[in-house]
Length: 346
Image 1 (spheres, rainbow, N blue to C red):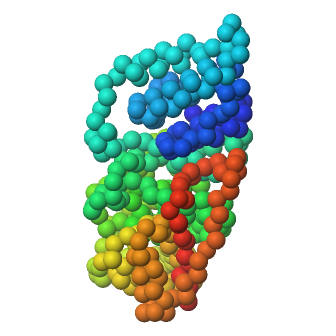
Image 2: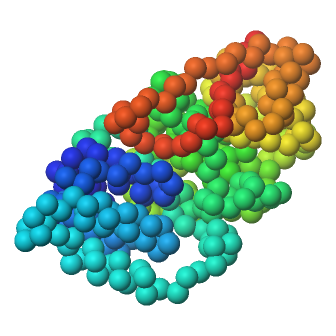
């Protein structure tokens, strides 16, 4: 659904984009706006009516948001005869309250479709989100890391979309450790890459990648675009790497951009990753390599040290600042943990 066509205030559109991404700290519109019956009608249709929006957040999330909305409206009512919470909103709150409470641990394991809106102007109609079916609240353990979208991917998405779209437009893109596929889908759907190869080292993650690509195809997000391809790629498997390079050279294709987000989290994978990046740079000398990571431990500094000291890369940190206020209008993510983007150059 395209809420911008409903003629609402930009703050409502931002609220909607945050809600559909299912972030925790949403920006609620002011109460003076929420008491407007037309705004409440819009909120019900776009935020809570499953007959209008097939990818609504789960009931627990809806309930938390709606309860706060009702409080804001009630606190802003000045004339009891004129100002009130709409029947639709109150009835939906009653419906949500009647549902049995699911165990939170079980709920965290369940895949849900999240809508990631790019940071386009809030009054621009026809903005298409990237749809990702994922377990957003899943804790990172072992093979689970590829089943949710991490902050470093959103940070790199913001950087590519707002600061360097030319790195992707009409270029050949290779993503390492693609996980849910947000970056690969962004490059294909919004930044018009000539080709995108999304790779991951885990078979079940590649299955999820295929499913997310299909989800976006079925909903028209990739209309007029070349869909990403998916490939299993183990960074320690040299024959598989050689096959990837051989296929590219046989087709006369060279990779222009290599990207990876939150792929330096474990000490055991740092050297294989760095060596793979060295091989890619040797094979495609003009390739741009961008790696994004949330700094939770010293593994990222270990990785950059290997790249610099053993593979002769120059490690250059890239500046990416997230704006405040209404200019922060998509790819919402927390920067409470420091996130760095580096370019590896020779």
